[in-house]
Length: 161
Image (cartoon, rainbow, N blue to C red; front, side):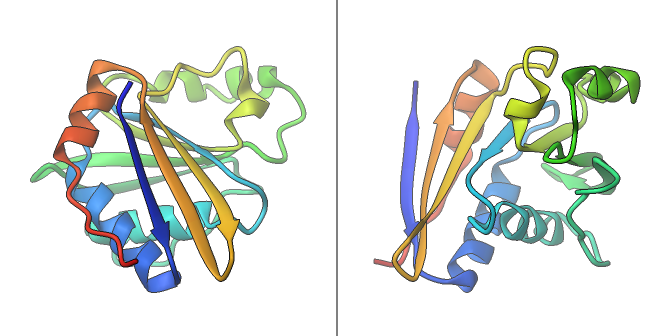
């Protein structure tokens, strides 16, 4: 399993990493975002979506559970679907909403609070761990599949130290 670790000292570094991750995306990727409230999960997703060409606002789908975005992935039109399962009361809500169908090998699915969807949530290709560390954020990515490995192989990011 390949790992990538970085320290993101401020919000601009988080935005720069989101842009770098956007350039490494491949269709069908499933990304789990782990971190406490305020760890930067939505900020990272917002930066990624803007780097993929989304022009409008990016809000956390805390109440809608999912927000789809038509963007450019690896030079081609595609979809990123941002999930926030924090307010989900049971994994069955995920199934009842039909979200599993979104994990179709074409959409990039980014999931905040994935533990709320276990065991029905499809397995991740990449796990992102974010934690508050001093004034910034500690970041770790783990590739958990061949597709995740491809994403990390394509990732080019030089963190500020």
